[in-house]
Image 1 (cartoon, helix red, strand yellow):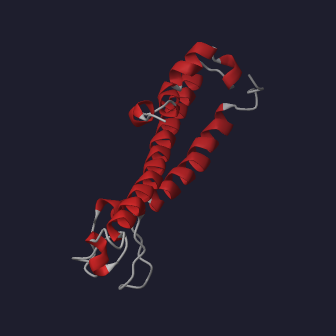
Image 2 (cartoon, rainbow, N blue to C red):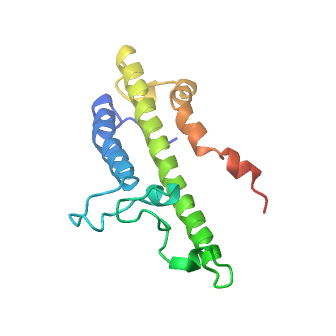
Length: 155
C-alpha cells in the first residue's frame, strides 16, 4: 500500500468537501435538462431522451431523433436507427448513473472514515487497521464490482 501518512483528517475532509462534492454535483447536472436561454430549444439530458420525456415543443415527436414517418418504418431503417440510438444513450446514462452512485458512496464512506479517525484520535489513514478501512469503504468496493447486468452478459 502506498504512503497514506499525508492523508490526515484535514486533507481528507478537504478532499470530501471540495473534490468529491464538485465531481458529484457536475455529474448530477449532466443528467438534468438545462435551460440554454433559448426557450424553443432547451438542452435535453440523455436521461430525459431515453425516458421519452417530452417538452411542449416535442409533444407527439420521437424524443431521440425527429425522423417523421421514418421513425416506425423498417424499410428505411428508421426504427432500427432509433432503437440503436436509444440503446447507446441508455448505456451512456447508465455510466453516469453509476458514477453518481459510486461518488455518493465514496462521500459517505470517507465521512465515516473521518468520523472513525476523529473518534479514535488517529491523525492519518496509516493508523487505521487495513480490515477496518476496507470495512469503512465496503460500499465503494461493492460499486466497483460487476453489476447484475454485467454478470448476465454473454460474449
